[in-house]
Amino acid sequence: MTDIQVYLKTYDGPPLRLMEVCGTHTAQISRCGIAGMLSPAIRLISGPGCPVCVTVTAYIDRLVALCMEPENVVVSFGDMLRVPGSSQSLNDAKAAGGHVEMVYSPLDTLKLAANDPGRTYIFAAVGFETTAPVYAMLLEEAVARGISNVKILTSLKTMPPVIDWICQNQGGVDGFLAPGHVSVITGSNIFQPLSEKYGLPFAVAGFEGPQILAAIYALVRKRGSACVMNLYPGAVTKEGNQTAQKMVEKYFSPCDASWRGMGIIPDSGLLLREEYSRFDAGSKNLNGDHGANAHCRCAQVLTGAISPNECPLFGSACTPQTPQGACMVSMEGSCFNYFTNMRKR
Ligand code: SF4
Image (tube, rainbow, N blue to C red; front, side):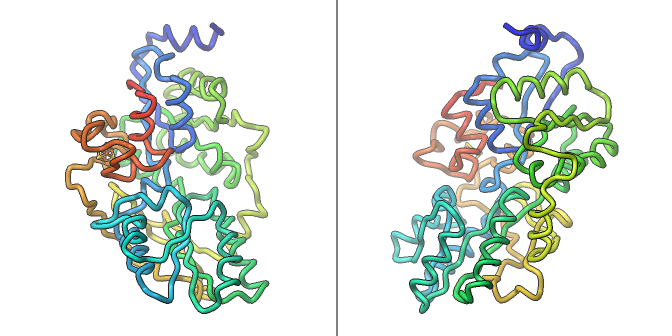
């Protein structure tokens, strides 16, 4: 055992709740069994870090409606296809005759559209600051190549406003494992105002088990103090990737956005700028959040209010084969990771 492991296993200070807000961290913490390496006084909780999970039902319903129109094809990453809407997932719609294509990169949409000019290809643009630059590149390419039958339906979200929401409405968090991928784009400075506002430590972490343990150690040592620690300096700078930031600013502007379980959070989303609205497939006012299964408790899971295994459907009606909510669909979802790796706390 390293000194850090011994410290974290034998810690007997005040009880701490540390939140990760990145789906890749959630998955990695689960895979590596990191919760089991900690003292009972240190509890890890998952926050709203999985982009698929925080996407509201109204957005899925809109995609389902779009794919049923003969002139449209909805294009998406694979995990979005299984997320339940209020009555159907995209997979259900496809089985019923809807036009849905799965791709590995949003840029694949360009080739599909160029080969089929009679239909409009609509990409399901879900994600955080990390993926927003890729959607900007998609539009940049579409403009440059004169491809006019590409659109996006946006449910893009930004991280600082939702962390602010968690601190104001949920509370009980003693430190944040700040998202590494988001920080590559935004820079670590973006968390400084939140750290100072709430007097909390933030640790930007990489994704290997030892890197996550080091970040947890740093948060425990700095408990009760306002600071932002960049423990992923090989990839993250204070200012972030300014080329990517400029590209995003060119196409998108901040907007109020609807989050599963949290409602509308001011200025927490990105919408196409007016001059590029011809690429928008109808992204405004997609606010409904009523899932097909009224007993699904994704809303509480996403805010760290409960652990996935406190949901009455967990592991019985809801499994990765029979997901009742988005958190069991995505490989970055808390419920999926609890189920597959049985993270205990
Ligand atoms: Fe929703 Fe299933 Fe998670 Fe329960 S276990 S909160 S039903 S996704």
